[in-house]
Structure formats: structure tokens, C-alpha cells
Length: 340
Ligand SMILES: [Ca+2]
Ligand SMILES: [Ca+2]
Ligand SMILES: [Ca+2]
Ligand SMILES: [Ca+2]
Image (cartoon, rainbow, N blue to C red; front, side, top):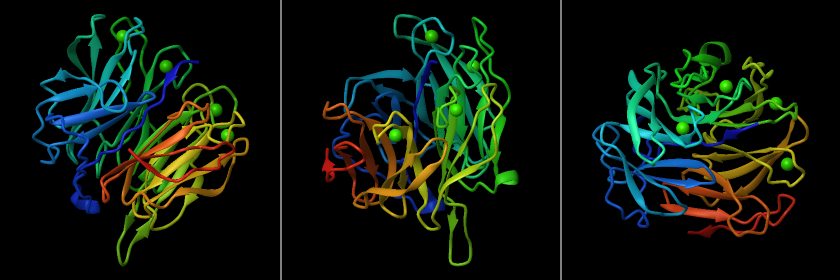
């Protein structure tokens, strides 16, 4: 079963959650948005720190950590989520962009790769990009197992997927809700990840919701997953973690325990924490902490950084301006933080 796992988190100033702009000195490329990829994961960074609305240039850095930038589009205003996937099934990677303009305006589009690495016309998939705080995360995966790559999103109020009709020039369905605020009390869904979590051969979905915390109102703060029946019908929300005040902001699926079952790794913004939950066979063990030294963690990725055949974790944290990785010494035993 073919899919590309990816996951994104906005790293920018967000007044609602008092986010601070990320300034990473390594990002010296003067582009409006810089993206980096770790094992198919993508991250958008507002590198000029001037907010979301005024970007008029979108570029890709194709190799980890900081490869050669190339222009993608001059029309994708406000874009901050980008995913590569072969949406039309012709063997080359097309590009999906998720654009957040404000809480009521945004769109998800795809750009066909012409086979020479150049991207053609923008095809709008949807302008239904959610409620407060709007689109945050897109992953590409064949959710209904028909051989065509679909899209899964977290858009603040909902976890949803869009079905690829598989035509030569594919179009996408309307938003199929997996879980939402109304039915599941999801608040501020920021991140989605995909993988077969219960071992039935069908790709499931995990999500992280940073919740809302104030002196009088503390809710959600969940990491959850949803079982796929293979046709894109999802079971009810199953809670992996619910720690009020943690603000889980990024979720990644990977087998870090080394038992061939896919585990769930979570970055928690307010707790400055990266932790993982071992998959015990469609259920999850207690939280195991990888680090609490990622101040304002905003994004995670999983990859074998040091080539020892275990999956390591990379974190981006906005309050200490760090990109760091944590070596997996096997069996879920973690080494200390290495700042990149
Ligand atoms: Ca293609
Ligand atoms: Ca499909
Ligand atoms: Ca499954
Ligand atoms: Ca495992």
C-alpha cells in the first residue's frame, strides 16, 4: 500500500496562542517561505517573520537539512503547508499547497508536475479550510485503498479527508469529516499523521489538538486516533493522550520501539515536551518522555538520522530557536538532545 506520510505545523506568530516567531539562524535563505523535508515530511517556515498574509513566493528545499531552493509558485499567497505526492499517478511527485489567509479564507490546491520538475496550473481542491484557527496540516495517503492518493487534513475544527477520484486529471471530493468539534469536542486540531495503527492493513489517522487554555477554560488537549475500515469510513475518536495544559501540536507515526508496530510520537507546545506512546496492538501504552528540553516545540519529524537503523526524532522549537534531534538507541531508549 502506497502512501506518503507527512505532517506540518505552522511556525509563526499566532495571536490566539501567543506564538512567537521562529528565528533559526540556519535559515539564511531570503525566501518568504522555506520548507524542509525529513523523510517525506514537510515544514513551512515564515522565514521573513512578517506574518502569513503577505508571502508571494513559495519555494522548496528538497533535501534535508537545507538543500537547494527552487521556486514553486508565485501565486500561492499565504501558503504555509506543502506536501509532495503523486496525485495523478503518472510517476512524478506533484505538489499540494494548503493556504491559510485568515480564519474564514484559505484553500487547498495541487500543482501538477509536468514530468520535468516544473509545476503547472493550480487546481483548487477546496476552499473549505475549516474554522478557527484554520488549516494547519495536510498529509497524503490512499485512505480508501483504491490506488489513488487522497488527502487528510487538520483545520482547527475538524479532522477530514478528501477523496481523489483517480481520473487522469484528478478531482477531489468535498470534505469527509473524520472527527470534529461538534461531535468530538475537538478544539484546535493542528496536526495529522497516517499509518496502520491496528495492523489490519488499512491506513488509520492520528491527530493532535492543542486545545484552549485560559484561567477559566481548559479543554481538549488531546492526541487521538481513528480506525479506518478500508473504505475511508472511520471509527470514533480513540484517545491516546489527554493532558490538560500540554498543548500537543505535532503528531508523527513511526515504529520507534522497533517491534514493527507503528507508535505515536507527540510534540507538546506548552509542555516543551516530546514524548511517545507505544503501540501495543491497536491500543497505546503510557506516555514515555523523549525530552522536555524543546522550549515551545512546534514540529516533529521521524527519520533515521545517524544511520543505525532505528528511527530518530527531530524537533523544531520556537522559544529557544532550536532544530534538534534525539537518537533512538533501540527499544525506545533515547539519547540526549543534539542541536542541529
Ligand atoms: Ca504526478
Ligand atoms: Ca484513494
Ligand atoms: Ca488500520
Ligand atoms: Ca513499535
